[in-house]
Image 1 (cartoon, rainbow, N blue to C red):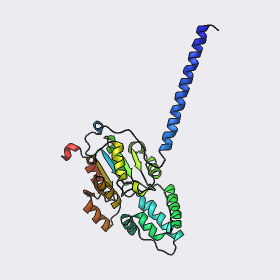
Image 2 (cartoon, helix red, strand yellow):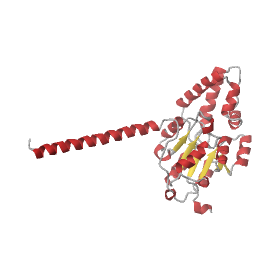
Image 3 (cartoon, rainbow, N blue to C red):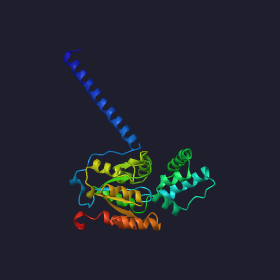
Image 4 (cartoon, helix red, strand yellow):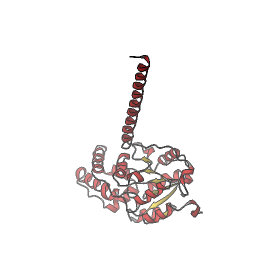
Length: 280
């Protein structure tokens, strides 16, 4: 074989190897990305430049999940609690749905469950809860998906801060027909370390650092006290989602402690999507 031809063949073979290597790396990156969508913990994205945020009043929304975005308690968590008592404490009568909301508000779900179950039973209770979350995908509140789609289309970013596991939250979003448009940019779910879940300010402070924003550029939306306490501790404005339940003590607290109380998703959408200029 002539030398020139041999060099040409060798060069072509090397090019094929490079292309194959690049394709392998891309495939591996794709697999890792899909795995990252279902892992516990935050989903990282590049920091957002201020110029990309349009005229929105708030650059970042710290969004609660259950009873703010989806009907989590009504359709998943309360039925799981009833099952836990039936299996582990048949001597007890479950509280009503309204009372369950009260206990989640104060003293908080973990503190309340520890009053009912031994440490061994708590392990079983957690397993029952996880099974219920795997079997049921709660519905989004009417208008919430539309709100998120519009907010993100205008350049807003969403960080979900919830007591539900991160992979469960992500699964709820992925099941929605508009998943591509409403998918959160960051998900901070249940953490075994109490210092890394609300009412601790850690999730909010982590989101501030992650997106490179100031507290004044962020709005927190929640239906219960833990999210309000977290936001206030981080210097962030907290507003109330009042469409998930109508428990009077919770309403009284949220109206007193939050900057605004919204009875409907539409009312909140009108507030969130108001431009910065219009708000001045």
